[in-house]
Image 1: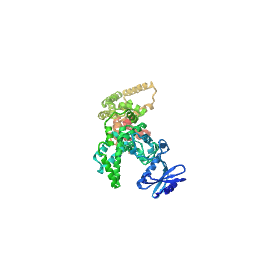
Image 2: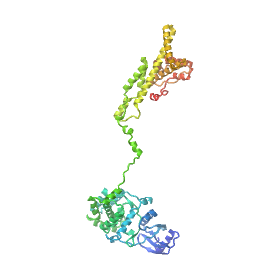
Image 3: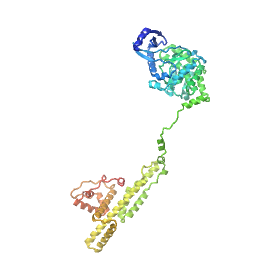
Image 4: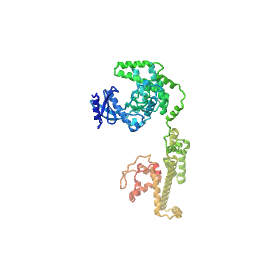
Length: 572
């Protein structure tokens, strides 16, 4: 594995094509890496080779973080950020070459409340948090919500509790903080993720660069402020005051409390690291730090107590809260709003706005009245009443269903009933006309056979009166009269067949094509004979013998339920 500066320089020339090396010096900043600074023609470069697998994983994460910081986000930062120039294979691992960010180091414990460096630190942190969330999203970096971060902290506390090495006072303090829902009501931002004094490069009381971008993500801004508690609460308060002037922070008290929690949870991570690595020295160091945290005077206890005082919010905090409050907008378009106020939809479920339905008794009475006025014979009115009862829909059943369930039919029952009654009245009138024509033919035949002059004269007078009434409109012909009588008979036959459709089984259509002899009369044919007084039977016999008109021959076929439409379809 490469471990000397000249070997690292050779790897740098392999990773960056065209690189000309003018000098090299050893660089010992992180013991987990073999590092060297390469002096090129126009800049200084840093080449690093990880010594452990954990260091290699961190190096890969750093490469991803630097790749997400493209030219646009880099231009918004007031400090320098390393840039990856190339990488190459180095034994079982790889060497990565980046630009070198030079600067002085400082210790967090050396910071004072009046230090000139506090202002640049606050501005640098605020600039990172102001980066768009798309920086991490487009770079494939972790994006966490406030509740995700709360859950991560809870799981870390549970793991530390399972070791049985955390004092009960400290454990309750941690649990009380993660259980306070108001503390975790914040907007995540772009965060450095591992920011501390070791990652900052300063010069002349300015922050000139920040390194270590392996944990760049969308997370809690308080995580980048937790390290400022190392010198004390006063330093954090001073930085927070300058930080709040740079950006909208929301509740400073909540931000301070979460920062204190993250600061103490670093000790829990150190304890878990010692247990997982079986390093007793690390475990003892972590336990000692936990013991020093026992008591009520810690940073987290003080910060949490401040949040529980329920002090009135300052003007700045109120403005920050209003800025963070999302606008509540209706997702309904103008068209949807108009449709929601549609009177038909509003009143469709209200029974007060529905027209009363006709009862079955009313429909039957009206049907009987219309049939009686259209027919003078008892048989005609009876047939019309039966047809009306068959065709009128079950309005009483619909009314009962509406009363029980509140379901409103999507069709007009009253108009449907009226149409059915009209059809029934028309059928009754056709039956009456057919009966009258049959009686007329019978009377005429009796007069001719018996030679009764009076009856013949009476029939001739009736026909003459009918002819004189029709002459006012047009002069009827013998063909017109015969055609009118045939239509009346056909209507009577169809009406009779409709009434008996539900009472008789389907009659087979097979019969002797020549004469139909040897087969009894079908039930529907018998019903037609009863309705027309035998006229239908004589007509069938006459058409079967002559077979002159195929259309008329269709009436001699037995009726089947598939040949006739249902009453509602015939009405429409």
